[in-house]
Length: 117
Image (cartoon, rainbow, N blue to C red; front, side, top):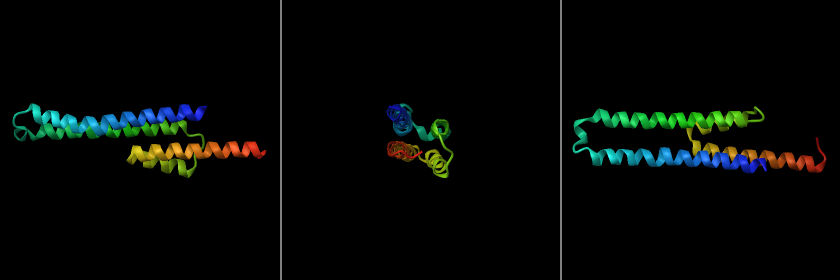
């Protein structure tokens, strides 16, 4: 049951990331270009919009990393590598993190069912 809650949490975070970073950024710039008659006259505004979207993406990546650090039960090397991958690419990192936790949960259940401690 805990894996379902864990899975839902990270899927929701991943969907938020996709909506914010992948959709709002390009459509925000497109909206700016259609609203302003001559965007070439003020290139600083475009740079400001791109800087803000980069900062928002960085903050979202940082939030994902914090959530993952809180959810880590063990501090193995593979877990820290997953955190690094998540910081650089949240989609891939979260997918690997979910698969890795599912694998660890199945391994733990198999040991428990076989009588190993």
